[in-house]
Amino acid sequence: MKMAAEVRWLFVFLVLCGVSSCRGEAPHRKFEYKYSFKPPYLAQKDGSVPFWEYGGNTIASSENVRVAPSLRSQKGAIWVKQPTTFDWWEVELVFRISGRGRIGADGLAFWYTSSKGYYNGTVFGSSDLWTGLGIFFDSFDNDNKHNNPYIMAIVNDGTKEFDHINDGSTQQLAGCLRDFRNKPFATRARIEYYMNTLTLLFHSGMTNSEHDYDICFRIDNVILPKNGYFGISAATGGLADDHDILYFLTTSLYPPGQLPVDGSKVSLEEQAKLQQEYLDYQKKLNEQKEEYHKEHPEMQKVDYEDFESENQRELRQIFNGQSQIFDGLRELHKKLDEIVGRQERTLGLISQIGQGAQVVGQSGHQPLIDTIRRQEVDAVLDNQNLILNTAREIKSFVGEVHTKTESILNNQARAPTAHVQPMGYDYQSFMTEMRDGLNTLKKDIKTTGNTDCPTCLSLTMFLIVFAAQMILFLGYSCYRDNKEAQMKKLY
Ligand SMILES: [Ca+2]
Ligand SMILES: [Ca+2]
Image 1: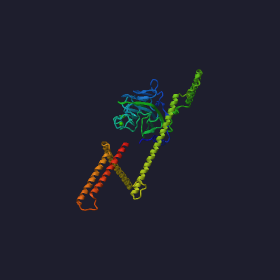
Image 2: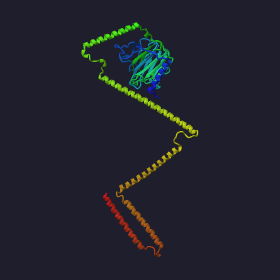
Image 3: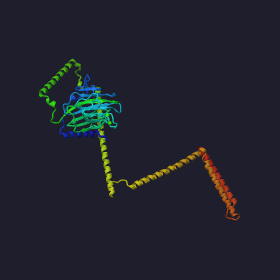
Image 4: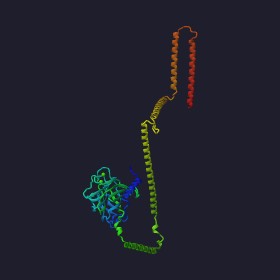
């Protein structure tokens, strides 16, 4: 699971607390400018970097050192001129590895070795069989284990050849999987070697905040050569990234009680002399300023130091706005983490209760919580089936109605006077009924023969009644036809 920035930072804080509490107090720190470089004016006009030497395909500008440019098969390195004079140190590396491809190559190396390496060697641009520490930011996945970009530390005694085929995995002391390519901000690595403990904190470059470091590795009992050289090298292969170093900031670390040797050497006399020099220089500067103002009285009113151009103001406003947005996002992130935490706690509690209820249920007592019982589930299922069946019936009924309607419509299409047919049917059925009735009557008469029957109806009487009935029926049907014709006219 991805750790939240706060959690990471807390972790780093705890580690740092642990480090400092292990050793009592925090070490004395001293910035070592002779082992550092930074913009602006990183390189001088002639291209040289003060206190450093570079070679191979490395290019230095006033803003950064491009250790290897994004061209095929490039190698380069930059090495400090003087070996260290301190035992423990921290190096802050601010760098950018960027390329157009989804995959890049080959990577960047940080060195602390007993002697300077080559400028076009086989291990990320510098020499193999080194003595000391190499920290590799390996972009390309040589062993195809889908575990690059990867950061790893290898300590070599000058005998081991770097295991390129396995991406150094057989030799590494420690490492971590981190993507350091094509980040919105510069990526950073803080490498600390203090009291034989090597720590690497990594900043993924997703924010511009100085606090977003997380730990990559921490190794105890690391023995590195004394008075080593710092160096950076990089190489490209078939694929190529730009490998830029923006800052290389070295700080020497001294355990409490051991003051920096150089610092204590400055005598009081020298201090006073330097102070005097500084004051003289300031006085001279002020005199020159006054002279300038006298010569250019029209410029006197403009206070350059407080002047802010419109662009600068706009930029500052944008920056402030973005900082606010970022703070808001950070707060949101924190809240989300809180919510997720709460949810997990709740889920944990629920599962606990569920288990408890199960245990109680098994032991024959009433379960603690009112869950849905078996018969209730069955009832719900039955209901559902009933509803389904009813729905099915309704469907078939509707289908029937539909077919009937269709047939009626077809009939209507064939015979526009739809009422004629049913009327014909009525006539027919009526006539058959009549015929049947007559037949039965005839039979009856035949069977009775000529026997006297005073109560029986005479034939003439019957025929008269029958004729009258027929006339009445015909009259009614004529009347109905007429009426329907009238209705039709109305329509
Ligand atoms: Ca590799
Ligand atoms: Ca790999």
